[in-house]
Length: 215
Ligand SMILES: [Zn+2]
View: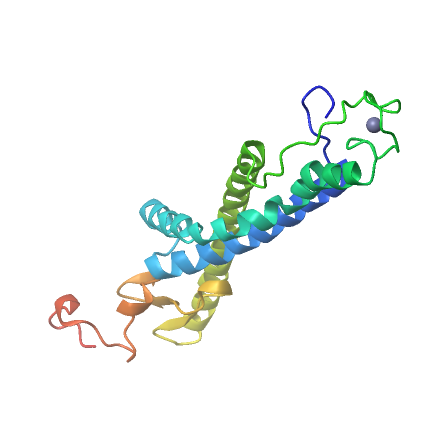
């Protein structure tokens, strides 16, 4: 180690690995948030619906703890395992220069091998930061996709209404396609949670029916 700092891996490879992880996590959060929003329901990103869905998205993030060891693996190789391997080969742990005298004539390393731990404090903190960025990007991206789908549906509803349709509905786009976007003259645009969505067109739950509405 050079002044108690274990060597770090090649910067480009480390950056590429972080970007790959961030992209995969953000993709996961897009899917999680779109499904969560469909389950909660609500048309036009109402704040209550978005916040409730976000709680669902974050709960859905808990299984990602299983990804942590994989995320830490490259850094573990570069900063922990590789120095140990070099030392066993009779090389300087820091730079790989073949020497048995330390400080290393090449890099000045003191010849010590860092402890072989995978779950380092800095590694875990970096992963949490990466997850935080990913959940923010993923959630915003999901909301943007949901809003785009809803405004497309508003256009479709307007033209189908103009063509004489009294009710318009279709599945949401994307990962939350198990929920339905709807328009009817009485309730306007709605996106009910899937389990409250009537399977028979025009059907209303007993509590919600209005006398004389003529459904
Ligand atoms: Zn060296």
